[in-house]
Amino acid sequence: PEDKDLVERGCFDGAYSYFATDGFTHGSSSRHWAALATWARDKNLWFSPSAGPGYDDTKIRPWNGGATRGRGGGAYYERMLGAAASSGATLLSITSFNEWGEGTQIEPSV
Image (cartoon, rainbow, N blue to C red; front, side):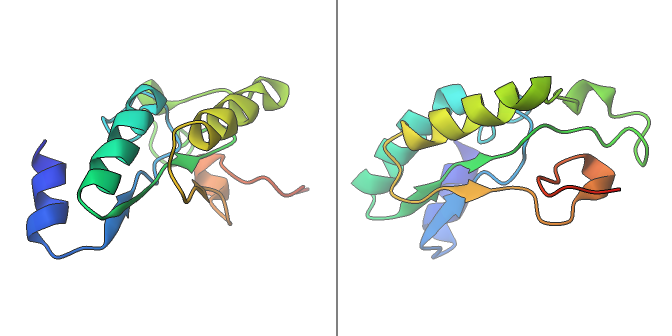
């Protein structure tokens, strides 16, 4: 609710969830994405759920194990992409790029 107020009062065109850990925050929880997409559409805003292939930043933030989500051989990524695609949002994003320290990379690495 506070984040929705911030988006509306802050004159933003919309919002995206960014964080690749399902269930860690309200916005990063795939179970909320359909409602967030509906809220955004009703406010003439956009919402973009962000899917990621997994998340593990314990090598750089050892205290943050609660945010870790295993890849499951691609199953986590597939589930997150499916949830994003079925949320009703008109735009989705992938949290990856070069976030190797957080274990979100999707490109092969050595």
